[in-house]
Amino acid sequence: MRNPFAPGTGLRRYTRKHLVHDRDAARAEVLRLEGEIRGKDRALIERDERISQLEADAVDVSVERKLREQAEARADDYESRYLALKARVDNEHAITVPPMRRDVDPDEEPTEPAGIDVRTLREALGTSAA
Image (cartoon, rainbow, N blue to C red):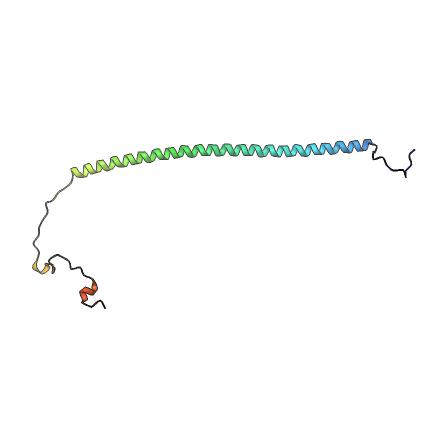
């Protein structure tokens, strides 16, 4: 038998109880790590799905942009063709009238020989620029 007052050796006898405790702790750690791995896998799958969705959106945007550019080009072409046809039709059906000269009543004759008198208000009132 050992002396209970003797200094310890640092080694302890591993009992079945210790082994069961260690096994249960190891299983708990494995379960915890498996949960972490499942969480990381789920996050990875969600990230991959998001990347796929963004790539699909980018393709949709580029296709939509190309379609819009083609539609704008066709609209410009149609507009230019329409304006050319409109000008041709307008020229074919244009009514030209020779310029007319009407007699002006002497009371309606302009007071200035060049037409409308255009002066500043100060010149019209005859005030000095003091």
